[in-house]
Amino acid sequence: MVKIFIGNVPREADKDEIQALFSQYGAVTECAIVKNFAFVHMDDRKSATKAIRSLHLYKLHGTAINVEASRGKNQGAVKLHVTNVEKGNDDELRTLFEEYGTVSECAIVKNFAFVHMDNSDEALDAIKGLDNVEFQGKRIHVQISKSRPRFKYFNKICVLVSAVVS
Image (spheres, rainbow, N blue to C red):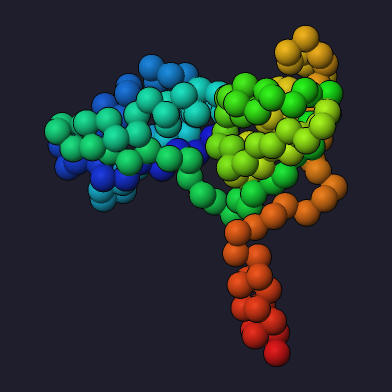
């Protein structure tokens, strides 16, 4: 199950209308409106990803709504290691993994790649869906990387943590 956040929901919108809008992309298990935002739960990640991409900035009653994956607990980036891929297929590999969620980075190095997914749920779905499947004529293998993910602000975080611990 995937939880989706919908922001900037107009007052005129109701629960049934939002549920019908998202149901075009897959099974909706839950829908709730709170003030000017809403949450929709969809059965599977592929449907949710398609709904997010299609409905972000969709005009509902003349108002552009903000649609994105809900950011719950334990939603840090996850680095995946992909083996048996050829250099030069970065864009195709990124597109393949984007079916399972947001890819923040994708780089092929020699005959393997690193793909950074936004959170662990998306990464686990990608592993389940893509491990041992054929890509560009070769069977790829996908697992969580044993090397640590790079973060743009890693040094600043270390300084901040060091200051808090001291």
